[in-house]
Structure formats: C-alpha cells, structure tokens
Image (cartoon, rainbow, N blue to C red; front, side, top):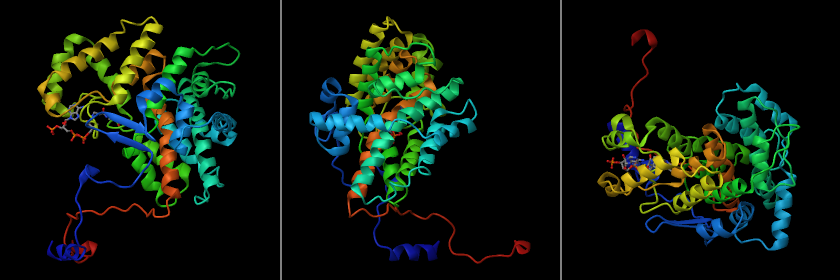
Length: 402
Ligand code: ACO
C-alpha cells in the first residue's frame, strides 16, 4: 500500500535475500568451506586428515580452542568432559513425562532446554571461564541425554555413564548395555562413530548453528540457545536428512524401482527429492560424504554385512544420479547424510536416533560458535528486516460493523 511504501522509502537500502544464499551473518575463525573445491577445514586443518589421524575428543578441543592440544591439555580436557557426563536426577525425571513413542529429537530439544533451569552459573556470558564450563558440560552431557532418550523409547532402564570409556564407547554403552549383563563395546563400531562425529563436528553457518547464534545474540541462557539449534537440526532438509535417507531407501525397497523413483524426483512429483543429495554450499562434492562412504564399506565388512541391500541400493542411486543431467546441471552430489544412516543402521542404531547422533556430534560446533560470538564485544543482536507485503494502513472497524 502507498502509506506503507512511504515508510520503506525512509529506511534506505536493504538486501532481500530469502534463505540467506548470499548473506554473511558473521565473521568466524572456526570452519572454512570451499564449496566448489570440496574443501572443509576446522581451524585450518583438513577434515580428511582429522578423520584419519585424530579423535573426536581432540577435534572438540581444536574446534573450541583453535589449536590442537598438547598432551597435558588433551588430558585435562578429557578429564573435564568425563567429570561432567552425569545428569542431575531432576533432569532424568523429565524423561518420565514423555510418551514412550516421543521422537528422541523432541526429547533432546526439551531436556537440553531444561538444562537452562539447572545451570545458572553460566548465565554470566561475559566470563570466559563460565563460557568454557558451559561448553564442557554441554559436550559431556549430550551423549547421556541422547542415550536416555533411546532408553525411554525402548522402555529400558537408563544406563549411567562409564567414565573409564572414551566418548563414543561410552555413548554406545549407555545405549546398548542393560543392567547386570556384560556388554563389550566393539572397537570398530566405536571408531566408526568417532570418525562420523569428527565429520559432523562443525559446518560454519548452517541452519542450526545460525539458530544458536541468533538465539544466543539476545544474551539468553546458552543451554536454551543449544536447544533451539537442536530443534533446527531436526528438519529433514538439515540434520533430519539422515533419517529421511533410510526411510527413502526403505520406500524404494529394490533396485528395480530406482528408475521409477528417479522419475518422480526429476518431475518433482509431490516435492519428492533424493534425500542425502544436494547442498547449499558444496557444488562439487561434499568431502565428508566420500570419507563416510569408505567408512561404510569398512564397517559393513567388519560386521560381515558386505552385501547389505541398503548399501547396494544407495550405491546404485548414487551411480544413476551422478550420470543424470538433472543432477549434473544442478550440481547435486551426495552430502554427509547420504551414507551416514547406513553406518548407524549397521551399528544397530534405530532410524529415529540418527538425527540425535548428529546432534551429539554438532554440539561442539554450536558451543564453539556461541563462545566465539559471546567473546566478541562487537556482537549485536541478530535482527533481520523484511519486505512487508501486507495491507496498507487502515482504520479499526468495531466488530458489529464489519
Ligand atoms: N533432489 C532433487 N532435486 C534437488 C535436490 C534433491 N536432493 N536438492 C536440490 N534439488 C533441486 C531443486 O529442486 C532445485 O531445482 P530447480 O532449480 O529446478 O528449482 C535445485 O536443485 C536447487 O535446489 P534448492 O532447494 O534451491 O537448493 P538449496 O541450496 O536451497 O537447498 C538442500 C539445499 C536443502 C540441501 C537441498 O539440496 C535438499 O533439499 N536436499 C535434500 C535434503 C538433504 O539431504 N539435506 C541435508 C543437507 S546436509 C545437512 O544439512 C547436514
């Protein structure tokens, strides 16, 4: 409307950028991506080198603190994470309130948000020590919370963390062990999870990290900010894609149905997409997908599942997609989530726990971004503008005269 237009004239020039395809919302020194070349660096280190030689806990230190730790620094960091793995009994009782079939991501969002009611000592966001305590707590407790969500889903008793185990072995133990029965963590499974977690640790300003930063920019409780990130991660276009890929493979069922499915995708029938394909930034290939595909082969071989029908179907889909003009023209390649679900499934992790696994790994990235943002004195509240398309100014009409 004319009057509204006048108001906008007064505001100066704005960029209209739906989906923020060409907007940098912040400066950051944590992660670098070159989408054309398929490069991903954490603090300057190529992710493939970290996946091969490092451990998730070491990568956590790197992502949080900017440098690889010396031996004593790594020991101190690991010790701090181990010390914080328990969750308060009050936090545990939140799980009693959920229905047994609640989605674990719903439980994760709620329970992590509830941590803000337990930890007030970190609300002084300006104190670096408080920021660090928050990050250590969050990284330490998120596997315990994710495993508790899994146990709730299966109606099994909650397993306490065992702090003699490494990060991923502990998570597997909390998920799969049952009281009074011996449980031995398979080191190949634990290492596969560790590599997956390294690959998921951070990815600059993706939707969930941007959500954490946006919420955090208001100065809110950091646990509440992480909870908002978990909610954003859940969507099928973001972290929920790993779950969607497995559901898609189940739906296709057999390689003979692939052409029919591909026609649906290419004709955009009911908005069907090839889940696990495409990325906002990677227009060549997602370096994480290559490593995960190799890990997939390794894990399936170790478990004697070399002829896993889902893996065969996924490889077939990839082969067909990569040689198809629809995908070539749009530069759509497998992303991090295309193969990760196959590994999770081979490890016995149910489909609805795939995205919580992603959330556990990404927690360090969210914490690092929150810490970076909070330490930066030039941070301002994130407050985008809009292009108003509503009614022009009009006068209120009493109800009986409408
Ligand atoms: N299958 C089929 N077509 C696709 C796919 C796909 N997976 N992804 C994109 N396209 C098509 C779109 O239909 C569009 O076609 P058009 O030009 O004819 O309109 C074109 O490619 C560009 O797609 P956009 O949606 O505009 O790309 P955007 O950068 O906004 O979205 C996204 C990126 C969300 C990842 C998208 O590729 C997608 O939906 N992929 C499937 C879901 C998925 O795997 N998400 C996980 C991403 S990784 C992560 O978050 C951890």
